[in-house]
Length: 310
Image (tube, rainbow, N blue to C red; front, top):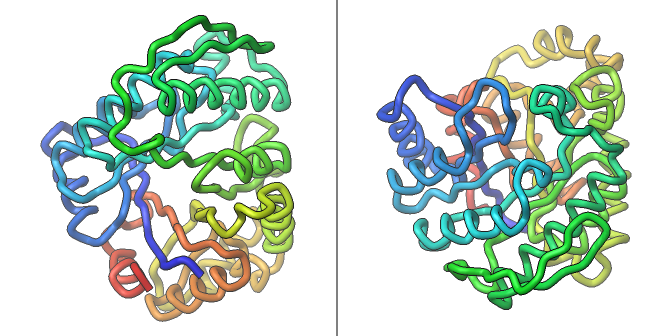
């Protein structure tokens, strides 16, 4: 089993001073990484905010969870990502996704293609970016992108490229992650384009068993090289985990006992959380856990301190 590490996801702050202090706090609390989402709603731009966070810290990794491939041309994103990896001296984790939030596309006036098309386009984009980072140049002719003698400058600090994180809840994107990524992120199914009943129905423990099996099959011999990540959407340190689960269970339309087994839910005392995470690592292989800063970066730090590196 890989040792535990933890990340915190946050999106904005009242001002630059608060943002820098949050990054420093995450570092001092033992979090491995500070992640920023990539949406068009109420959040800071990820590339600038990640650069500031990296400058404010010494050991903290930074990354997007995840960049939407459709929002930036891969030649543009490859340059920005390589630059951030250079200025952070290798502390950049490159997360890439096919896009899922329908409202982003509607607000920006971009066509919201089907998931298969978006995943296919992301696969092409990732191939281009890998070539730019690894070879320093790229020519590519695909269904969605056509580039000629594109220059990959600067080259990333991390060779051959920054650690790549790809994830999702469907078989196609998880299989792509298994073949191409270093970190595979697991989530519920979001093909509806918003977080709703479909996502809740596919967040059960047995569905995550299925997802891990897909990744294992697609990865083949490289499975043991992968770091498996899970973003816990519901994290709450409490002495009464059952009461919290009773309020949450109706959203998933499952029993209280089953709600406590959902990998996206982590609730209880620090001891209970540590026990739960250890059990989930044994069951799924998840060693890299992401929590939201809104869920209590400080209280959860007790879990981080106890489990990181073990």
